[in-house]
Image (cartoon, rainbow, N blue to C red; front, side):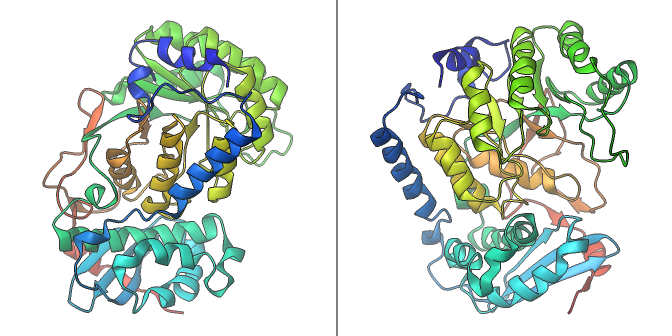
Length: 430
């Protein structure tokens, strides 16, 4: 890593990802691209130790907690997961809407394996899931998303048993409040319309940070020849800095749109206007290309929302291929696996800004993870609080106040889902 990349982090605009956002355990020892093979092997060994170490605080549960039932409930396109122990404890989670496609994997590959297991062994269960019945063949979001839905329900149950928030089951509370950035899209719009939509999104919430999309990739278009609006990105980047001034933290995401050469060109423009990081500058799984971009730029590079393998993060961290890890807690298979990625990054002086899946209670689960990591970035993804889930949260208003959201402190996930809302959902069976 170039020293300039660390300098960029510490000297960028006030309120952005500055030195205060570095991991609490960061000692100032910088990983450099000139390190020897022995140094890289040492880093691999350190990361492997973290991967193999349990996260769940099993010592909080002196007696076995045997899972008796595990259900996936559905009402239209709304999904809930409900787990019960033989002793009558219960946990519930809100599933991702993509379960409308993936529910057979939940029912055929995951549900049977959890029945009869001791919930205290959740770390081991998650590890074994990836090899049980050749589940590795379903690796990625297809396996991770339904698995995360189950894990959230089990953690909710365990939190109620221990009378602790989930954050205290998987770590310590480092961030009782989470600062957020407003995530915007509008990539396919002309510059003026795009800019107006960004301003409306920012004005709606009391946030002090903003992430914009650069490049021209747009997943919603059916025009296979769509090339975007040439020159728009180059105008938008300085326009946002001019509009919001030096105190607004700005982030940019290309969703893997660029080639290495173009990513470096756009990255230097982001540096010029003091953006705080560049997310997915090239395709997410082109790890050598990501490293090439990161080595060429001073601005920190972020990646990982599409990754579902420890191997991916392990290589990128050991080889100094990125600065910020971004696992999605649904896609990556839950909080425990994502916490391991956070600790891997922390061990090498890197930060975590997890990706957030929209809808349901994804925002809540994301912030619960952030509350417990020691190396959280300065701001975290916010896509709005609109949800069809009817629930109460006794310990937090779950609103943005001065750019931050207070993380619930109640047991489990800290929310009470309305019983009548739950009753609308019926168990799915194969």
